[in-house]
Length: 438
Image (cartoon, rainbow, N blue to C red; front, side):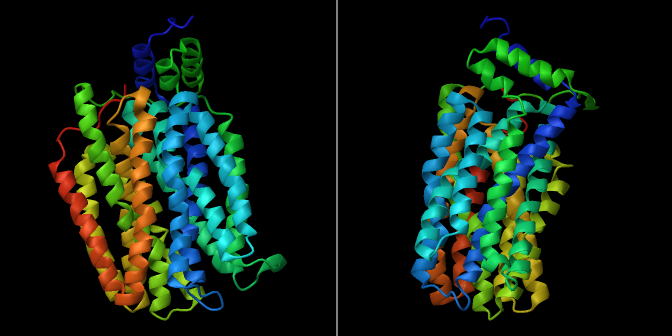
């Protein structure tokens, strides 16, 4: 019967559960899938280095289009994925995105030229645009309220190992070219294989009970809750965070423009700067293997940052955390662009990417807590589409500035977006953090 289990009972059961073995398995599977998503995004840094170095030097306009293509696809992919997730389920949509990523990564690996590579990266963007907000939405739906923030950060921290492994794989295979394939092609092959494995493991997970209840599928929601309740407990139940008062429709309408504006501004720092770091190093005269080494070391920062912040995430308001991250990014980015010595280059890039990952984690969690279950995936993915618009535009603007005016001028534009985002956050309503999901 559809009325066998009313929706409030589902939310109460989920939030009062202990953290179980099935919860841990869901965190691990989400981390695996997100790791290959992040790997695909980080391969853009490798491509920026490869096509900025002999013998593959591309024209700045051509390279800008290549780097932006994945975000162009993501502009359409994010809202479409959000609609599918709210209509057909979180789990089913995530599996579909991983299978799409598997196919498009394989196509990118065997692209005969930069034009076809650009086309495959655009198609990959359809999957990459929707996966990050939806995987966080799925875990936010599934995890007990008192454990949600820390374990989402643990998931993201583990996922950031994917880019580290991918960049070092590309660097190790660049001089070897096994089977006659260049190192960057093996990065896409690894992404394709890993995405298919993650999709298979997602089949073993339950659908979001909150989503099932919101769709009036009470029996299925009850069974999903029972699977979680019958799984062995790993950590005891804790009281959920205090819930803010429910928002009315006018408050929700006010929340979305803020979410969209923050999402649009963030790519200049969180996406474009790491993406263009390889091009910056190439412009400073570093060889491809050295550039890939420095990029690989820098992308290990997010793993450290997310695992550390998991211990304090529920003690720090999301808004405050994002402002502090932005301030740190301003300092670290300036260190990177004005330095020429390897130690300071690696240190600045490491700290910047560490703070980037923390900023994105707080932003995604902040967004997921603004909207109720029936519209959460659409609202968050819609805001994420604005993020992908910003991510598509940023390389087109920043790469010509880098080539024409240098890294300091490029970072001045990035700094302006960071300051604008901070201003929006400081004007946001207080008291939004640690809201209990409905």
